[in-house]
Length: 394
Image 1 (cartoon, one colour):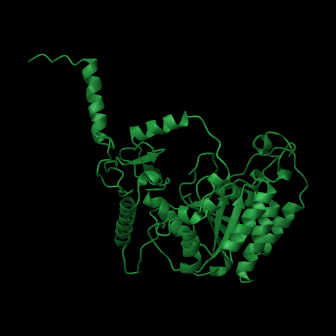
Image 2 (tube, rainbow, N blue to C red; image 1 turned 90 degrees about the vertical axis):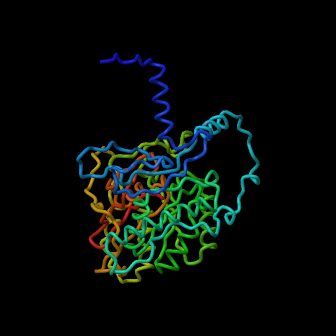
Image 3 (cartoon, rainbow, N blue to C red; image 1 turned 90 degrees about the horizontal axis):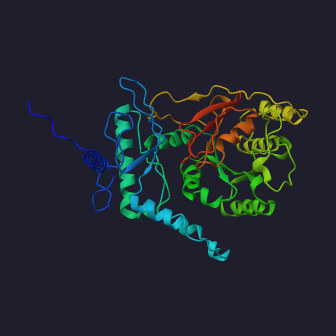
């Protein structure tokens, strides 16, 4: 039997580099390899698409029935050259720009031809497999069309996982009222006109815009943005909201460090004023078709509670989550069974989950400083006939 040839550490290192490069997203010239963008999320054993980077990907368990990466965030992978260029740019001196140079035209920001994915046409005669195949094909064509028309380097991050978009479709289908939450610091950039047009004109549903985190912006700015949206979108109801009103925080409001270091006073309580504004907006939409007395009583009780300075453990309720592939569809019936369904939609990190906890008066949805923490839609009952649907950020 011949002796094995010596395999040095240098050769082993070169072998690993070649293997890594072979599986990488880019060829020898640094260009992306022409590999398909979208794969079926049900195929956990399929080869990973190298052009797409998964965030917080979980290890696969052999023989396991679950699909831990079904809702994993997926984005385009950046080349080493692109990452290096970003790092070099970050080291450069910051030159303050004038306020006028920072102004942008929203018509230039939101390209009229740039739309978001919508569930393709369907009918009740289609099987689950047929519907799933049609949605996969539609989404693949949608992404490829974006690549054809736009330079992806100039596009913002957007979700490449079809499962996440299915959650948005489901929430829009179930909701009687679509609640769009935006950060008051960048509201116009977080409110796409295409979403407003689709919900109000195609789905014929009511929309309420919530300017969230108003405690982080001066009052004149909040008022100015409110008037802007009321003028630009006639018929749109606009609310101001904060999940951390001053009466629920310890410390002085004039602290130099601001609200970032102020701690919650005692147990988590309802943001009663914000909840009352939302209730009044919902009353205008329902126009007496849904009995909202129990919701009003809940808010009134919270307003009449005395201050509770004792710390209490946060109560966490079970939430209703989707257990199987959400490829079905049901015809929407407004206020079905006297139930009001409010869908919460918004980009990552605008505070959707915190808003829902503040409306409930206790923690029912987990929150995180990491954008995209919510992975699938959750249904939480505010009262017996009012429910909230939390949608993953898009």
